[in-house]
Image (cartoon, rainbow, N blue to C red):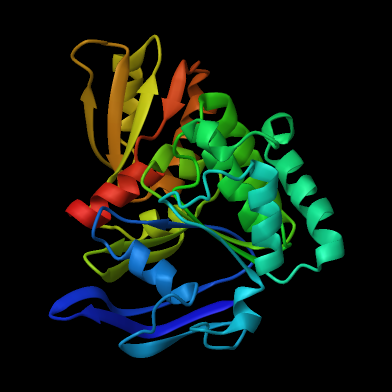
Length: 306
């Protein structure tokens, strides 16, 4: 749906985005990066707010800048609020639906459906000036999806929501991706993103650092051995057997918990297979088995901080 080909964007002498090539298709994709990484610049290129200085961005095969045909198929939820405070939530979402090309006869119904979807039906006729941060965020999401766009671009969509609201929005966005919509979520809250998708585009200082499935990306970072934590009753005895496995690089015990050890390996799949055979052979019972490296935060830190 979206193709970014060697796109760069300069602000005078400052590089906002530097020679980035990636694509976004159906499903949820997380756009990640620290402040100044280039996330906002890429979002503005996709939504047609900016032109690339070099390269190109195409949405449905068309250039999005000042393109009404593309804009009508996009739903955009900016990080910064920009409301008509005197309006009610329903009035605002209805207006935005009309501006996105929905016919007047249908605008009320589609706005109501979107408001219902984000859980704001009971406050829809309250003026936005009286909304909390969480309510404002929900109404922003409602206006982004009311016209039934094929692509949703959401900049920090979970900010301001309480824990229940966050979970509801995560489920909603994940469901939209599963139904074939292209959902792009810009965020810095890594554990929340990981609950919605494993597909990421990672930017750092304007450059593309990684794109694809988190676990596949992690498997390519060979300079950082995988850490695997094991907790069991007879840890020291079992550790002697683990050290004989060819896939193991090192093993150390937790100083605070003698029953917990951490293994380093460059071949996690091989290790998992070997340790499973060892467990069956010895009849050992495991207490806990986990890896602090098979998550988004670890991948992010390895790529960005080296």
